Length: 91
Image 1 (cartoon, rainbow, N blue to C red):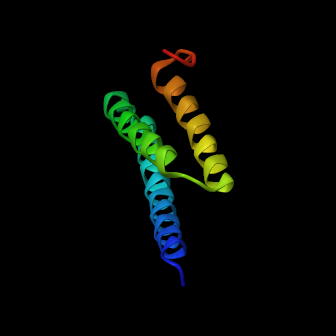
Image 2: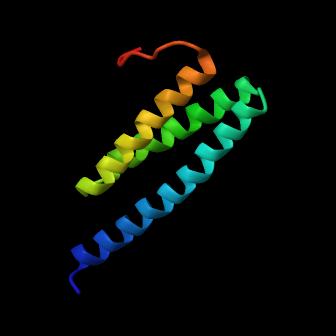
C-alpha cells in the first residue's frame, strides 16, 4: 500500500474520531443549556468551534466537509439559543 494511502487512512480515522468527540461535546452543550448554565455552555461552544475550525483545515473529503458544515449550522443555532441573538457571518 502506498504511503499516501496510509496517510489518507490515518487522516480519515482522525477525522472520524473527531466527529465522535464533537457528538459528545455538542450533547454536553445541550445539557448545559438545559441546566441553565449559559456561561459554561458558551465556553464549551467556543471550544467546540475551535475544534471544528481545526477539522476544517484538515478535511479533504467532500462528505467530511458536508458534516463539518452541518455542525457549523448546529453550533450557530446553539449560539443563538444561549445568547438570544442572531449570529451573522463575520461577527
